[in-house]
Length: 435
Image 1 (cartoon, rainbow, N blue to C red):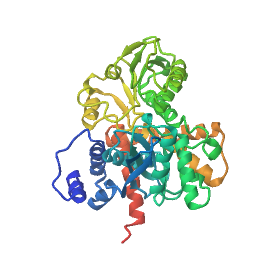
Image 2: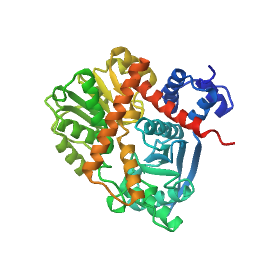
Image 3: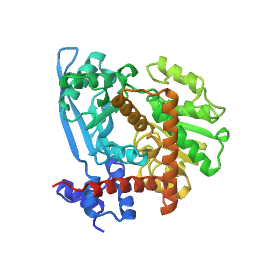
């Protein structure tokens, strides 16, 4: 059928399809989408509609630096889809942010929301900058100008940003204030992941890591693995990785390795995750110099003899070059897009159970949805209620995805894509195409 990727590329770029780069994050998303589309026998027109970002915003962000010099940064906001509801997605600040990455992340948000049954579409934003080289004042001016440039894009019922890599509750507070100053009323629901005193939700900071823990335990149940018997390695020790490690340890798992940009840290007898979190917090969010573990490389961590591997760093960490060396029985993707399509196939042949990113790390957007609901109601929930509802939604989503994978005899990733694409396609069919 004529809904394969070459149709999309010709339609969007108006030129012959380029040589495919399997480690381009957007193309990685499209390759998985293709498989789901074929299983669903998706209408060719719906294929093009659902794979193509609805809107792409590229904006110059001029900032007066502390030196007095004006520096111009490039900012992005991609709205991939808003069929199920207002678009939702984080904003990342990083020197290597690029449009393909943001497009992929926005698409993953569309499928992620559909998988966990949250009534949002997908979006993502980014600014090309190095926040570690910027003062708080420069970051505030950058954030406010970026928000002002996108004032007609953002909105509680249009597009709702959240924190992502190198952004946090303070940056969300600046966006909230900038938006509110322009609209002349306080609009708490315009962002999520903000401080609790400004309408943030209990449990939001831990939500993504908690979701990773919940689906990891669910995956263990499916293969008959007990948490107390499980050795776990976690790549990435930021918000997601550190909290997932802490919560899995609380469930009885032995965390034998973690890593951050400074490298990996290994102890066969188990690491003290709480102590490592305290060390990182006191050391500019870095484990560099930590002495109570054997130093290994990030590459070595991925191939350790463990039961569970949690890649919670960045895209394209498990590739054709190292997938055959993976020894874990379960991979729970805390990061977005950590496994390339070719690596996916290699892991399938090895019998590794991969809990895909669009399911495993959906805890963040789930509690973001809870925060948005609380803001709109003006009534806020306890931490216990947030966590109970998050655990229930994540476990339900895992069971639904697992059932789909069994029904179609596919991996959990393809099962998740089939569910998500089918849901959004059905919503599109019911709404129709406005002309």
